[in-house]
Amino acid sequence: MEIELKLLVAPQDVPRLRAHPLLAQYAQPAHDTPTAQSAPGEPQVLNMHDIYVDTPDLQLCRHQAGLRVRHVDGHWVQTLKAGGSGSGGLHSRHEWEGEVAGPAPELDALDAAIGRKQPIRALLRKDAIRDGLQPVFSTRMERTAWQLRTPQGDHIECVLDQGVIEHGVDGAARSVPVSEIELELKQGQAASLFEVALALLQDVPLRLGHMSKAERGYRLAASQPLRAVKAQPLRLDEGMTVEQSFQAILGNCLEQVSGNQDGVAAGEDVESLHQMRVGLRRLRSALGMFNSLLALPDALKTELDWLGGSLGEARDWDVLAGHTLAQLDGQAKADAAALVQAAQEQARIRHAQAAQAVNATRYTAWMLGLQRWLQARGWRDMATARQLRQLDAGVSPFARRTLRKDQRRLMKRGKRLLHATPQQRHRVRIAAKKTRYATEFFASLFAARAVKPYVGRLSALQDELGWLNDAQVADRLLQALPDGQPDHAELRLHAAFLRGYLAARAQSQVADGSMRKAWRRFKAARLPA
Image (cartoon, rainbow, N blue to C red; front, top):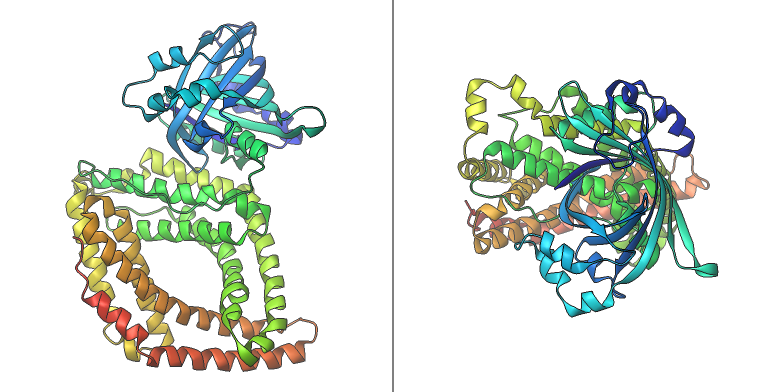
């Protein structure tokens, strides 16, 4: 299993990286490399040409695998990577490697190396794969590699790759530049990767790299746009401890957050920003579930609040422009036309601010610090003996207690739901959301036939409460919108009308019985635990 951390570095900052004192301090002779001709502690420099192969319909890519043949130092080496996961710049993937005679892959050699239980083995045995492999794209890199040994004894390979990814030939050729660092754990603890990265970040501006070269190459070859990443299914095992389940849940949340950072960084992708914000909310909910046993350090919590705030304002304006106002009809729709344009402009401004936040080294430092805390299990240093026993206990009893606690809280807050103030309804909505997140986190520990209807009724209740909350947010934004806008007097008039319209519509929804029905259906639902 390959474990590596990918970081992006601007070409103009590469000299600062090369001169970083940490590389000189930790560098070791590259005894295990075939061309180690440099002086002890000096980096090894290699020129590499990689050819990535796949079928015309990209079957390997569709199965989250990548197969390449690399020419380096007069040798051809084939490498297959498949499976694994990635979150917060940390990538874990299965890898099989071996020398070949030339630029074509040798699948029989790979078949012998891959374990029988690996799904990728069966895929490579298909005739459509064996007969259909062809070059899809290539990379040309100058690689500078340092072998680092930390004071704790961890062995980390620090690689600087600079070059280009290419697809096509002649006039149809397209390319993208590459300038990135890979910190690969050869021996030791994964937390050390983040220690080294944070040390480099103190002097060199770095950004987390979410996509591998293979992913970037496929995106170039297939002209694929960036796509928002939703929460991936989470599989917990009954044999896990509470602590292991916490690490798995937080890793799942961070995978969603980091999976959307490129879309947010690009500037205006509404769905990427929405999904990144959902990932942050799931992260907060997960931390809340375990708060009796561990606590996020204050510095990391402050940065979580900062990032959530940066995304929250943009999302509120997106919902106002693209959902709340877009659902209006009749005279209300006519009055909303100018307001929609003004709200869209405010959304663009907030998206630019969110992009600036995600592109900042502050975001990189937060994600690296959070991953270091997660990998090093930093909470154990502050835990009591009782908390440690609970962390080491099996997860199933903890999951049942958590779901029962969440349901009791939701039931208590919802007792007066039908006559609640907007603020009280908001508290019910938040409780429903936390209950649904918790149920989804622990879903694999319970029967699907019990989980699905429970989550479905929670979602229906959230939908009813969500629109009412959107109306409240719209009221706040519409009050602020006319300030500083052209034709502000006319906008203010339209905004005042729509605020009254939305308030009346919200009151009508409360009275029409749909929320009452959703609440009663949820109350009748059986808790999976």
